[in-house]
Length: 344
Image 1 (cartoon, rainbow, N blue to C red):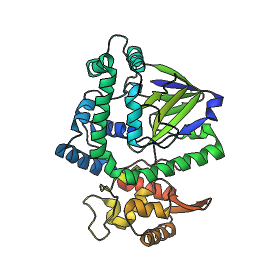
Image 2 (image 1 turned 60 degrees about the horizontal axis):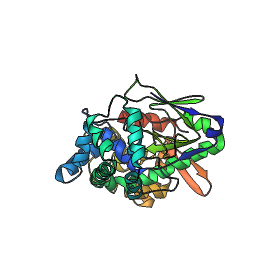
Image 3 (image 1 turned 30 degrees about the vertical axis):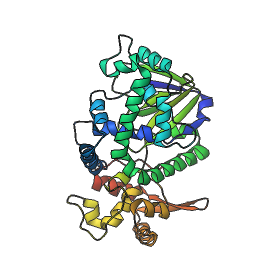
Image 4 (image 1 turned 180 degrees about the horizontal axis):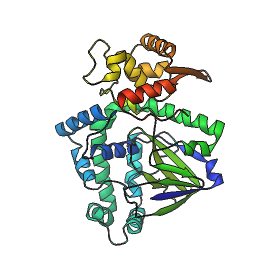
């Protein structure tokens, strides 16, 4: 159990950071589990395992399967304030000071560093380089092909949370995160895989990291300057973007729905893809780019879905946003056996 002490000043000092590195670690956690990956990760997981079998990247999965979560915090540095790519984050990972690595391992494992992390204690610089190389190979094989579809969804999540922060305040944002996170003012609790262990961290700044792969993943890290900045991952809306199983996210409307895809059988593949993508509020242009459909086709489907009473639209500035309403979320939850986050 990790408890983050969030004072009044912190509630007004929240930051939301997108992190390709954290997404990669969360996907490793999901893929390393023995049970089958649930929807919407099923097709992605199958493609990921095939890609790892054809080339490099499998070593990271093998190492992770023997380690699990939570990882020492230095392996998931706090995302920077500016939008960073995987290369920038891996560069920051390689640059973690040796003293920070050894101090974190000593604090986390007072009885002695376990074997999977022994090299980090003995040769931190070389171990970090090796780890970053493994993550790079795994990212290239499994996450990078989907990133062009994932990034717009994460951008929309940031906009959504920014709207809640601006209109209802930081406490409203923390209260709606769900998953392994529980907000009981002034404490944000993160349930990890070590319930007997309790850590208390006091934050002056809190960074929320939305992840499409976060399902059940306890990720928490402290900044390099001490416990003044704490980052915590949460499950972002819109993970349905991974359900298509294609790197481009393209949807073939002229083909038969996959066997067992009840939503697509009912409304067609194109419209089903849009319903799934609307688990997070988004625009017509983002849907068209993400799903590989013509904007006119997306617009036609949205008009029908609004008329059917499962999608609502509203304006934020110059943007017209579409999202599932209560009926739409119930439809998706029932037909896909997926719990959809309540609208913010």
